[in-house]
Image 1: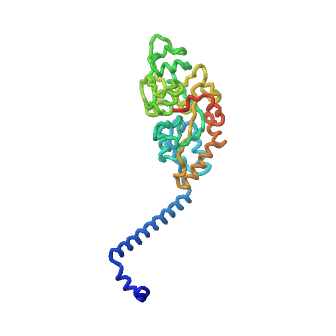
Image 2: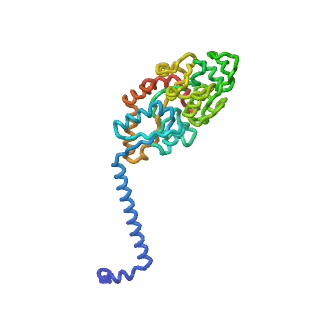
Image 3: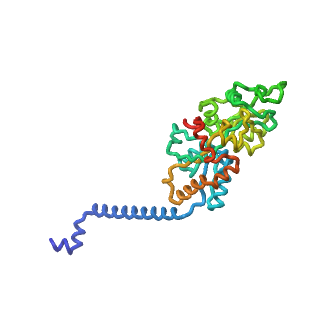
Length: 326
Protein backbone atom coordinates (compact mmCIF):
# COMPACT_ATOMS: atom_id res chain seq x y z
CA UNK A 1 0.00 0.00 0.00
CA UNK A 2 2.91 2.25 0.79
CA UNK A 3 4.46 1.54 -2.64
CA UNK A 4 1.26 2.44 -4.41
CA UNK A 5 0.94 5.75 -2.46
CA UNK A 6 4.50 6.86 -3.18
CA UNK A 7 5.47 5.46 -6.56
CA UNK A 8 2.49 4.37 -8.54
CA UNK A 9 1.01 7.71 -9.84
CA UNK A 10 -1.12 5.82 -12.32
CA UNK A 11 -2.85 3.98 -9.50
CA UNK A 12 -3.50 7.28 -7.73
CA UNK A 13 -4.91 8.82 -10.91
CA UNK A 14 -7.28 5.85 -11.27
CA UNK A 15 -8.55 6.52 -7.74
CA UNK A 16 -9.65 10.13 -8.67
CA UNK A 17 -13.15 10.30 -10.07
CA UNK A 18 -13.87 12.13 -13.40
CA UNK A 19 -16.10 14.61 -11.53
CA UNK A 20 -13.30 15.54 -9.15
CA UNK A 21 -10.90 15.96 -12.08
CA UNK A 22 -13.32 18.37 -13.76
CA UNK A 23 -13.74 20.37 -10.56
CA UNK A 24 -9.98 20.72 -10.09
CA UNK A 25 -9.55 21.77 -13.71
CA UNK A 26 -12.27 24.46 -13.40
CA UNK A 27 -10.73 25.82 -10.19
CA UNK A 28 -7.33 26.10 -11.88
CA UNK A 29 -8.87 27.96 -14.83
CA UNK A 30 -10.81 30.33 -12.52
CA UNK A 31 -7.68 31.05 -10.47
CA UNK A 32 -5.74 31.85 -13.66
CA UNK A 33 -8.45 34.22 -14.92
CA UNK A 34 -8.66 36.07 -11.58
CA UNK A 35 -4.89 36.39 -11.37
CA UNK A 36 -4.71 37.71 -14.92
CA UNK A 37 -7.52 40.23 -14.29
CA UNK A 38 -5.88 41.48 -11.10
CA UNK A 39 -2.53 41.87 -12.82
CA UNK A 40 -4.18 43.69 -15.74
CA UNK A 41 -6.04 46.01 -13.36
CA UNK A 42 -2.84 46.83 -11.48
CA UNK A 43 -0.97 47.41 -14.74
CA UNK A 44 -3.81 49.61 -16.04
CA UNK A 45 -3.89 51.64 -12.81
CA UNK A 46 -0.12 52.10 -12.92
CA UNK A 47 -0.42 53.25 -16.52
CA UNK A 48 -3.25 55.74 -15.83
CA UNK A 49 -1.65 57.01 -12.64
CA UNK A 50 1.61 57.68 -14.42
CA UNK A 51 0.20 59.43 -17.47
CA UNK A 52 -0.28 63.18 -17.21
CA UNK A 53 -3.83 64.23 -18.05
CA UNK A 54 -4.31 67.08 -20.50
CA UNK A 55 -7.84 68.16 -19.59
CA UNK A 56 -9.93 69.06 -16.55
CA UNK A 57 -13.69 69.22 -17.18
CA UNK A 58 -15.59 72.13 -15.61
CA UNK A 59 -19.37 72.55 -15.91
CA UNK A 60 -21.28 75.53 -14.58
CA UNK A 61 -23.15 78.77 -14.96
CA UNK A 62 -22.35 81.14 -17.81
CA UNK A 63 -22.10 84.08 -15.41
CA UNK A 64 -19.31 82.40 -13.43
CA UNK A 65 -17.60 81.51 -16.68
CA UNK A 66 -17.63 85.16 -17.78
CA UNK A 67 -16.77 86.40 -14.29
CA UNK A 68 -13.44 84.63 -14.00
CA UNK A 69 -13.30 81.03 -15.24
CA UNK A 70 -12.53 81.78 -18.89
CA UNK A 71 -9.49 83.89 -18.03
CA UNK A 72 -8.32 81.60 -15.23
CA UNK A 73 -8.60 78.57 -17.52
CA UNK A 74 -6.43 80.29 -20.11
CA UNK A 75 -3.83 81.31 -17.52
CA UNK A 76 -3.74 77.79 -16.05
CA UNK A 77 -3.26 76.19 -19.45
CA UNK A 78 -0.45 78.62 -20.28
CA UNK A 79 1.27 77.82 -16.98
CA UNK A 80 0.81 74.06 -16.72
CA UNK A 81 -0.16 72.90 -20.22
CA UNK A 82 -3.48 71.45 -19.01
CA UNK A 83 -6.73 72.53 -20.66
CA UNK A 84 -9.76 73.45 -18.57
CA UNK A 85 -12.69 72.30 -20.70
CA UNK A 86 -15.42 74.83 -19.87
CA UNK A 87 -18.94 73.50 -20.36
CA UNK A 88 -22.10 75.49 -19.71
CA UNK A 89 -25.53 74.47 -18.56
CA UNK A 90 -26.12 76.62 -15.50
CA UNK A 91 -25.47 76.51 -11.77
CA UNK A 92 -27.70 73.50 -11.17
CA UNK A 93 -25.92 71.44 -13.82
CA UNK A 94 -22.58 72.56 -12.45
CA UNK A 95 -23.50 71.27 -8.99
CA UNK A 96 -25.02 68.00 -10.16
CA UNK A 97 -22.42 67.09 -12.78
CA UNK A 98 -19.58 67.58 -10.32
CA UNK A 99 -21.51 65.65 -7.66
CA UNK A 100 -22.10 62.70 -10.01
CA UNK A 101 -18.56 62.70 -11.39
CA UNK A 102 -19.52 63.70 -14.93
CA UNK A 103 -17.25 66.73 -14.46
CA UNK A 104 -14.18 67.15 -12.30
CA UNK A 105 -15.36 70.59 -11.18
CA UNK A 106 -18.50 72.69 -11.18
CA UNK A 107 -19.18 76.41 -11.12
CA UNK A 108 -22.20 77.78 -9.32
CA UNK A 109 -23.63 81.07 -8.12
CA UNK A 110 -25.89 79.42 -5.56
CA UNK A 111 -25.40 76.96 -2.73
CA UNK A 112 -26.26 73.26 -3.13
CA UNK A 113 -29.74 72.35 -1.95
CA UNK A 114 -29.08 69.65 0.62
CA UNK A 115 -32.72 68.63 0.75
CA UNK A 116 -32.25 67.21 -2.75
CA UNK A 117 -30.46 63.89 -3.15
CA UNK A 118 -28.62 64.94 -6.31
CA UNK A 119 -27.07 67.88 -4.40
CA UNK A 120 -26.24 66.18 -1.12
CA UNK A 121 -23.77 67.37 1.49
CA UNK A 122 -21.06 65.12 0.04
CA UNK A 123 -20.40 67.95 -2.39
CA UNK A 124 -17.56 70.29 -1.45
CA UNK A 125 -17.53 74.05 -2.05
CA UNK A 126 -14.79 76.62 -2.45
CA UNK A 127 -15.86 80.26 -2.23
CA UNK A 128 -13.92 81.87 -5.08
CA UNK A 129 -15.37 85.34 -5.62
CA UNK A 130 -18.23 87.79 -5.11
CA UNK A 131 -20.32 89.48 -7.76
CA UNK A 132 -23.88 90.83 -7.63
CA UNK A 133 -27.34 90.58 -9.12
CA UNK A 134 -28.32 93.65 -11.12
CA UNK A 135 -31.36 94.98 -12.93
CA UNK A 136 -30.80 95.34 -16.68
CA UNK A 137 -32.99 97.07 -19.27
CA UNK A 138 -32.71 97.94 -22.97
CA UNK A 139 -29.97 100.54 -23.48
CA UNK A 140 -32.44 103.21 -24.71
CA UNK A 141 -34.78 102.95 -21.73
CA UNK A 142 -35.03 106.39 -20.04
CA UNK A 143 -34.31 105.29 -16.49
CA UNK A 144 -31.09 104.91 -14.46
CA UNK A 145 -32.21 103.88 -10.99
CA UNK A 146 -34.74 101.65 -9.25
CA UNK A 147 -35.66 101.37 -5.60
CA UNK A 148 -35.50 98.05 -3.77
CA UNK A 149 -39.26 98.13 -3.05
CA UNK A 150 -39.99 98.92 -6.70
CA UNK A 151 -37.93 95.92 -7.79
CA UNK A 152 -39.89 93.80 -5.33
CA UNK A 153 -43.15 95.08 -6.82
CA UNK A 154 -42.07 94.60 -10.46
CA UNK A 155 -41.02 91.00 -9.83
CA UNK A 156 -44.24 90.20 -7.95
CA UNK A 157 -46.53 91.95 -10.45
CA UNK A 158 -47.73 94.75 -8.19
CA UNK A 159 -46.08 97.33 -10.44
CA UNK A 160 -46.50 96.82 -14.18
CA UNK A 161 -46.02 100.20 -15.94
CA UNK A 162 -42.74 102.04 -16.50
CA UNK A 163 -44.16 105.39 -15.42
CA UNK A 164 -44.90 103.94 -11.99
CA UNK A 165 -41.16 103.86 -11.29
CA UNK A 166 -39.96 106.92 -9.37
CA UNK A 167 -36.91 107.52 -11.62
CA UNK A 168 -38.78 107.18 -14.91
CA UNK A 169 -37.93 109.96 -17.39
CA UNK A 170 -39.99 108.85 -20.36
CA UNK A 171 -43.23 110.72 -19.71
CA UNK A 172 -46.69 109.31 -19.08
CA UNK A 173 -48.66 110.10 -22.24
CA UNK A 174 -48.03 106.74 -23.88
CA UNK A 175 -47.95 104.22 -21.05
CA UNK A 176 -45.91 101.09 -21.69
CA UNK A 177 -45.90 97.89 -19.69
CA UNK A 178 -42.71 96.49 -18.22
CA UNK A 179 -41.92 93.20 -19.99
CA UNK A 180 -40.29 91.11 -17.28
CA UNK A 181 -37.82 88.49 -18.50
CA UNK A 182 -36.95 85.72 -16.01
CA UNK A 183 -35.21 82.37 -15.79
CA UNK A 184 -37.45 79.33 -16.13
CA UNK A 185 -36.11 77.45 -13.14
CA UNK A 186 -36.67 78.63 -9.57
CA UNK A 187 -33.39 76.98 -8.57
CA UNK A 188 -31.22 78.55 -11.26
CA UNK A 189 -28.33 80.58 -9.84
CA UNK A 190 -30.06 83.89 -10.50
CA UNK A 191 -33.60 82.69 -9.79
CA UNK A 192 -32.81 81.05 -6.47
CA UNK A 193 -30.52 83.79 -5.16
CA UNK A 194 -32.91 86.60 -6.12
CA UNK A 195 -35.80 84.87 -4.39
CA UNK A 196 -33.64 84.32 -1.31
CA UNK A 197 -32.20 87.85 -1.11
CA UNK A 198 -35.18 89.95 -2.14
CA UNK A 199 -38.16 87.89 -0.97
CA UNK A 200 -36.75 85.34 1.47
CA UNK A 201 -39.05 82.91 -0.31
CA UNK A 202 -37.46 80.42 -2.71
CA UNK A 203 -40.89 79.43 -4.07
CA UNK A 204 -41.89 82.99 -5.01
CA UNK A 205 -43.73 83.25 -8.34
CA UNK A 206 -42.53 86.04 -10.66
CA UNK A 207 -44.83 88.00 -12.96
CA UNK A 208 -42.95 86.82 -16.05
CA UNK A 209 -43.60 88.13 -19.55
CA UNK A 210 -41.06 85.74 -21.07
CA UNK A 211 -38.97 82.92 -19.57
CA UNK A 212 -35.51 81.71 -20.59
CA UNK A 213 -33.63 78.50 -19.84
CA UNK A 214 -30.31 80.28 -19.32
CA UNK A 215 -28.88 83.74 -18.71
CA UNK A 216 -27.22 84.17 -22.11
CA UNK A 217 -30.42 84.17 -24.20
CA UNK A 218 -32.16 86.29 -21.56
CA UNK A 219 -29.47 88.98 -21.77
CA UNK A 220 -29.55 88.91 -25.57
CA UNK A 221 -33.31 89.40 -25.37
CA UNK A 222 -32.81 92.56 -23.28
CA UNK A 223 -30.35 93.85 -25.88
CA UNK A 224 -32.96 93.50 -28.64
CA UNK A 225 -36.34 94.27 -27.10
CA UNK A 226 -37.48 97.64 -25.81
CA UNK A 227 -39.53 97.70 -22.59
CA UNK A 228 -37.71 94.57 -21.43
CA UNK A 229 -36.56 94.22 -17.82
CA UNK A 230 -34.55 91.48 -16.09
CA UNK A 231 -32.21 90.57 -13.26
CA UNK A 232 -28.90 88.88 -14.03
CA UNK A 233 -25.31 88.73 -12.79
CA UNK A 234 -23.20 91.86 -13.16
CA UNK A 235 -20.23 89.87 -14.48
CA UNK A 236 -22.08 88.97 -17.66
CA UNK A 237 -24.20 92.16 -17.81
CA UNK A 238 -21.03 94.26 -18.14
CA UNK A 239 -20.23 92.45 -21.37
CA UNK A 240 -23.64 93.08 -22.95
CA UNK A 241 -25.03 96.12 -24.73
CA UNK A 242 -27.58 96.83 -22.00
CA UNK A 243 -28.17 99.43 -19.30
CA UNK A 244 -27.47 98.41 -15.70
CA UNK A 245 -29.63 100.26 -13.18
CA UNK A 246 -28.48 101.59 -9.83
CA UNK A 247 -30.33 100.16 -6.83
CA UNK A 248 -31.51 102.69 -4.24
CA UNK A 249 -29.07 105.16 -5.77
CA UNK A 250 -26.07 102.82 -5.38
CA UNK A 251 -24.12 101.89 -8.48
CA UNK A 252 -23.11 98.22 -8.58
CA UNK A 253 -19.31 98.27 -8.98
CA UNK A 254 -16.25 96.74 -7.38
CA UNK A 255 -16.18 99.07 -4.37
CA UNK A 256 -19.88 98.88 -3.50
CA UNK A 257 -19.95 95.09 -3.87
CA UNK A 258 -16.75 94.61 -1.87
CA UNK A 259 -18.04 96.80 0.95
CA UNK A 260 -21.52 95.29 0.93
CA UNK A 261 -23.16 98.67 0.35
CA UNK A 262 -24.73 97.36 -2.83
CA UNK A 263 -27.54 95.19 -1.51
CA UNK A 264 -27.65 92.27 -3.96
CA UNK A 265 -24.10 90.91 -3.72
CA UNK A 266 -23.65 87.15 -3.84
CA UNK A 267 -20.91 84.48 -3.70
CA UNK A 268 -19.53 82.49 -6.64
CA UNK A 269 -18.35 78.96 -5.89
CA UNK A 270 -16.29 76.13 -7.29
CA UNK A 271 -17.70 72.67 -6.49
CA UNK A 272 -16.21 69.21 -6.52
CA UNK A 273 -16.97 65.79 -5.09
CA UNK A 274 -14.74 63.32 -3.26
CA UNK A 275 -11.37 63.09 -5.00
CA UNK A 276 -10.64 59.54 -3.81
CA UNK A 277 -12.75 58.17 -6.67
CA UNK A 278 -10.39 59.63 -9.27
CA UNK A 279 -7.29 57.91 -10.68
CA UNK A 280 -4.16 59.25 -9.02
CA UNK A 281 -3.12 61.34 -12.03
CA UNK A 282 -6.52 63.08 -12.28
CA UNK A 283 -6.64 63.61 -8.53
CA UNK A 284 -3.20 65.21 -8.59
CA UNK A 285 -4.16 67.62 -11.38
CA UNK A 286 -7.51 68.60 -9.88
CA UNK A 287 -5.85 69.26 -6.50
CA UNK A 288 -3.29 71.46 -8.23
CA UNK A 289 -6.06 73.48 -9.89
CA UNK A 290 -7.95 73.83 -6.60
CA UNK A 291 -4.79 75.24 -5.07
CA UNK A 292 -4.24 77.55 -8.06
CA UNK A 293 -7.73 79.05 -8.03
CA UNK A 294 -7.19 80.13 -4.42
CA UNK A 295 -3.79 81.66 -5.18
CA UNK A 296 -2.80 85.31 -5.42
CA UNK A 297 -2.29 84.88 -9.19
CA UNK A 298 -5.91 83.78 -9.60
CA UNK A 299 -7.09 86.63 -7.36
CA UNK A 300 -5.39 89.14 -9.66
CA UNK A 301 -7.23 87.66 -12.66
CA UNK A 302 -10.55 87.81 -10.81
CA UNK A 303 -9.96 91.40 -9.76
CA UNK A 304 -8.98 92.39 -13.32
CA UNK A 305 -12.53 91.38 -14.32
CA UNK A 306 -13.99 93.77 -11.68
CA UNK A 307 -15.05 90.78 -9.60
CA UNK A 308 -14.20 90.67 -5.89
CA UNK A 309 -11.81 87.83 -4.88
CA UNK A 310 -13.15 85.91 -1.90
CA UNK A 311 -10.36 87.07 0.42
CA UNK A 312 -11.23 90.73 -0.19
CA UNK A 313 -14.90 90.14 0.55
CA UNK A 314 -14.72 87.50 3.23
CA UNK A 315 -16.41 89.83 5.72
CA UNK A 316 -19.54 89.59 3.54
CA UNK A 317 -20.13 86.07 4.84
CA UNK A 318 -20.76 87.50 8.30
CA UNK A 319 -22.49 90.66 7.07
CA UNK A 320 -25.57 88.92 5.77
CA UNK A 321 -26.75 85.36 6.21
CA UNK A 322 -29.77 85.35 3.88
CA UNK A 323 -27.73 83.99 0.95
CA UNK A 324 -27.06 80.76 2.79
CA UNK A 325 -29.24 77.89 3.93
CA UNK A 326 -32.09 76.09 2.15
